[in-house]
Length: 318
Image (cartoon, rainbow, N blue to C red; front, side, top):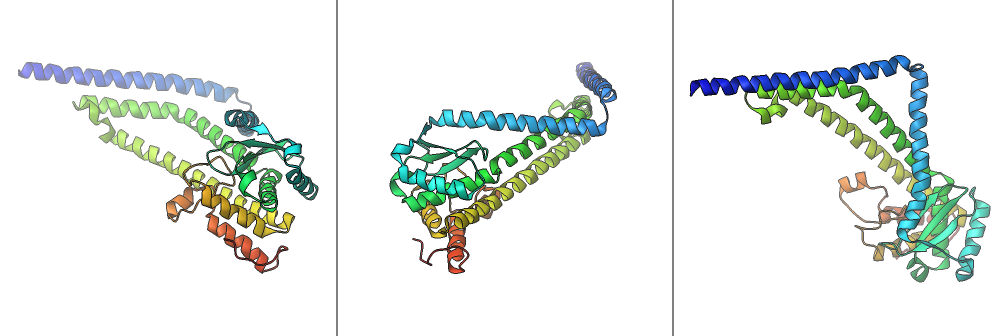
């Protein structure tokens, strides 16, 4: 019995050593490959430019092809000018006042009544839910169009896509550079666990705990980036509201549109829209939301009217 226990113990130590050698071998090969590539690289500055340029290119291509994919997935159809002449008349006036080209207007059956803009300032598109054409007035639709045109004018979605693409590219490169060290650490953790006779307890070894801390650090970094992007998105929503109010001279029209959409929209759906509205009071929900609280947006627009920063009469928005 004791001989069998000793044999099992010896076998587990042997497996641990084999695991360690295997992981260290793979990590060593990876390190040599990376070292060879690093020596062949033109220099740190050029390498950084290539990495950033690659991220920008990937972001640009994903944004361009993503626009077509969104329109196709939603089965959006172009809204003929003959079907909405008053709306197009307002759109033409907005184009003259803003630094944007003529966007294509599409209508689609969206999960919730909303609108969103995709594309660039010179070749953009605005998608409207079909129901908006029924329950919003022309003035309110003009406010929505101005809001979406402001997003196109500011290249909001485009800039965010590029920034995220560069971050993901840099993060991927850092992971690749650190992969030999990570492999060696995982191998050491698993080998120690086998040698101790508890293969499943490798996360509790010193190297396993180190890996958990590294994982938490990476998660924290991604969390901070996500919060920064969401905060920037909320600021751009306010900026688009302000721009729309200034261009139309009628902030109450946009406020009424937001309030109407709020009444009929399901707050758990319609996340495609830069105009998506909700009224969640939870602080964590607000931190991770891409949009400010609708009531706050409406209050800001009403305040613009009261202070005379845009034309219009002070009225209660219901």
